[in-house]
Image (cartoon, rainbow, N blue to C red; front, side):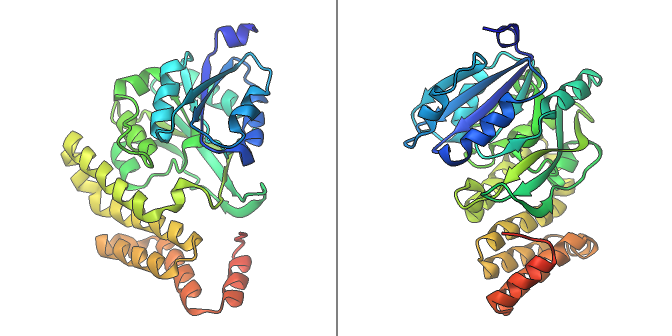
Length: 319
């Protein structure tokens, strides 16, 4: 066992459920990090494919494998956090990919800023084959507070985050009542711990994979859970929630529209866009992202598939 694995500074938690297809690339990107003081806690959530065998075939003292009965990603993450030893917790989904200096950049950033409890970076979208699809995350800069994060979830992806383990504990940890949006719930509670404790690192450090098997494809179920998280936050911080709720619903509706759009459910996507307008008409009109979302949905609904795909390619979108 190496010194780094005996005394990890960062615990990387990977929750796996039938993730064999992309898991090798994901684990390779974690184990190839330039930051060496890490442990890799892999939590298998009752996989029935070759995921466990793939992990067991790796000989690396930094790896710990936990095997659970299937209970969902939130339960798996909670189990991984219980086993983690590092001062920092890095989240990595089974299909995403990190740049080699991802952890080193986050650790250096947070060591120099003791008031920061959670960091996130920019990322690019890739398809199932690993090709860039011409889209990236919001290039957010600076810190963001609870209200801002509820209004617009600029973090964008779980694999994007490195947080202090102490802050995760102080926030109450993972709420397993939210199997799909447990990350939103957790990160909002961390952001409430102290003003300005959540900060963006203005670099592309992660690649987020889009494919047909993701739980984020179920837009209706995610929308229901989002409302449940809002109800929970209303209990925790009612005044903060009320002042931003209309804007938050507008932005969330655009996200739900995107999920439906990617499943070619253009009518459903357009209804989501309309709900966003109804939530906050003035803010909707002022945000160009809403106009683009509406135009894309109308294009898919009204044009022939061939012409619609041509417009997508002209806009730089590959899928």
